[in-house]
Length: 175
Image (cartoon, rainbow, N blue to C red; front, side):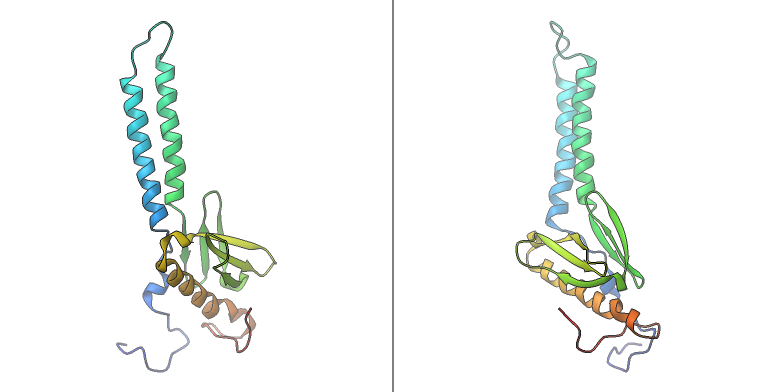
């Protein structure tokens, strides 16, 4: 099995890294930096605030100040955890607020261009779904990742129109 040039079998997988998790690189780094900075700054300020003077800065104020830092850190952590996890069965898209699980046949197209900051999937029900894990801010890497996602959609998404278990390609369909 060292030569991928031989005839493919029905159970042959694409390259192992084809199923690697999609993640934003720059967005993730910035979000993790913001999370840690918020915890350190707001925690430090809550501890270093002057003691109650003339009714100011009670323990409740300190706790609320630290809680604000925790809220900022949680939102930033959630942004850092944005991902899209492909498998043979489908794609789990974890965006900022919602996580959605799709099967490959549900995805009919991949759009990456125009004014959109991230990849958009066209779904078979006429809806669209943003994949925030592949962002233009990542530069050339984002184009390669969008192409990898499109290849997965093409390999596995069109199998609903065919009989058989393995990935199959349709001849002249496309948009």
